[in-house]
Image (tube, rainbow, N blue to C red; front, top):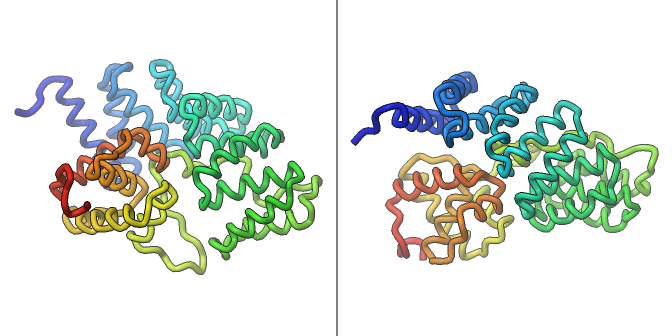
Length: 326
């Protein structure tokens, strides 16, 4: 039976929004649908909170002031929404309001203390904008422990170590990163600065005062690196699962699941898809963590993981203890 009435209309409209986001429709189309949803939904409803969060994400870089307005309305009704606090931190940082950005990221970390991206952005701001590397180091070390192969996280930690006079550790870390990313110019400049003794008269060239939007926002964009061949979807999946702590056997099973999903649904690999596959493999083996925990491990949103898992499960007819992935 089809849903009817205002509540049913909102469900249909929200489904259209989610489809538009997944299909990477034009920004104007997504914004128009979201604004329609905000206008029709009760201000304290799940639909309104969803729409305001998505509007903030879509408008974050082009209009951080407008994004912040949506987030204020969202946080007025959902003060424990860690993602909203993190997005507010980005909005404030993009507007140059660095102390307000730090305050927002502190709230996000308090609500989700193990999220590596929140810890990274908080530590980055404390180091680069408030010039308090001693306060920053604990957050940057925590982020690096969770994401040891992520070059931006490692570079921020090395920069902070350099400012604290721990150049030997910072040089070792930066050289390790450069072995993985030999064409990364920022890392080369960082290493040169560290080898000079991290002189106080200048910080690392091109070190941004604004944290990475990609590191927090749940609508990630692919990065390209000069002189490196693009990685296959399977390589992207394996790399993300490995960062999340998966074993070689788990990665092999996840790769089989990805091939089936790609064939059945013409799916595209992204962070959310990898997280959903990770969650699905855990369910098949009866050892799945909660969706929120898996989402945090991959730096994505729990509701996006849930939606992608439903698509995956339906596309490949996934069952409990599915023999194809045992």
